[in-house]
Picture 1 (cartoon, rainbow, N blue to C red):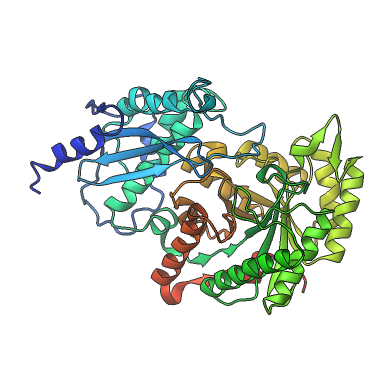
Picture 2: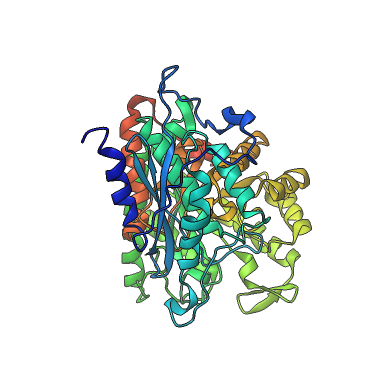
Amino acid sequence: MSDAERPAAIRRRVTRLVDGRLTTTGGEAPSHVMREHESAGDLTSHPNASEGAPVATIEAVGAREILDSRGNPTVEVEVALDDGTIARAAVPSGASTGAFEAVERRDGDKGRYLGKGVQDAVAAVMDEIAPELIGFEASEQRLVDQALIELDGTPNKGKLGANAILGVSLAVAKAAADSADLPLFRYVGGPNAHVLPVPMMNILNGGSHADSNVDIQEFMIAPIGPSTYREALRTGVEVYHSLKSVLKAQGLSTGLGDEGGFAPNLPSNRAALDLILSAIEKAGFKPGEDVCLALDVAATEFFKDGAYQFEGKAMSGDEMISFYEKLVADYPLVSIEDPLSEDEWADWAKLMNVVGDKVQIVGDDLFVTNPTRLAQGIAGKNANALLVKLNQIGTLTETLDAVTMAQRAGFMTMTSHRSGETEDVTIADLSVATNAGQIKTGAPARGERINKYNQLLRIEEELDDAAVYAGASAFPRWKR
């Protein structure tokens, strides 16, 4: 294809996105963006670029409505650059969402997708966002994201919708990486990105992720013993299949929840942990040495009228703390996520005083990947780890800022999927880019989960001898 033909070809491709509409209005970047800070938008200082090399600019932005793994609509965005690069990003959606998350934009038309359509968010990309971004250098990620934030103008991205904004933010980053001929993890993370995360596999689902009587939302395994990511993945897969046989032997359901884990009815939450320990041993591994356990309690989901409706009882914060203290003493637990409700800051601090030196306490709904709430949690010693979800805050830049803040404070970070996932594998690259050390993206089942694990295999292969598997070092508080 000749240089003269390329722009027209790009336009033809992106034009097909939504009803043949395309926004390619020319012009400079908006004046309200502070262009004197251009260097801040360069995530990697262009490790692959030579001085004076031409920089690709955004030429076209399009969007479409697609389906996520739960059959609900979500937003997919494509960005075309003037050098012929085209990149795509799709946005996930959560089942249990924190009250302080950035807002998804849904149509609300009950006659279409039961009100969950995203045509308004797609229109926001095409009609409001696209004209503002034409002419931006794709490498100016911070400037692009700041323009998106200012264009929305609300504290929770409620005008344009976080699903519209995030799709554009990620598509721009992917396009810039492709234009620079760099894998996304290297473009975002620079030359020091080399740590492969522990795959935190949610192999037994409860709570909002399953139609069962189990309160805790996720029972995860953490293969800390292997020396490589590839071997860790194999370990997790073998335990997963072993759990299926253990469940079958006890006459329990092997139906799957939203994230690919099994979802049986059980007499208690401890029963779930006991089943997983049996599966680890049946697979030939040692609990606490080869494979540890982790929980996402999602306690906000069952916090009603000032009490936790847990295992058939109304429990106080102090009673929940006592419950966790006993669990940590009895099981090889390395991580507990959202053990308490998102607004119970004082109880989080109490829990940290009781078990914070023994186990990772992860803030998900507590922090919602938001630097402001994270700063409060760091100052108050309310947790010691951050769950990282791109769509909670809505731009790549803000996500990276939260990760940087957490890591500088000595927090561990865990990159996370959502229950409504897509074929997009960005979080796999992000986990390596930030040297997070931990990733959770469901059970080793269902394509929208497996594709992230497979992407990490490819990254490990590309890094070759430079790759380091986080293993037990991802959980410095765990004592074997």
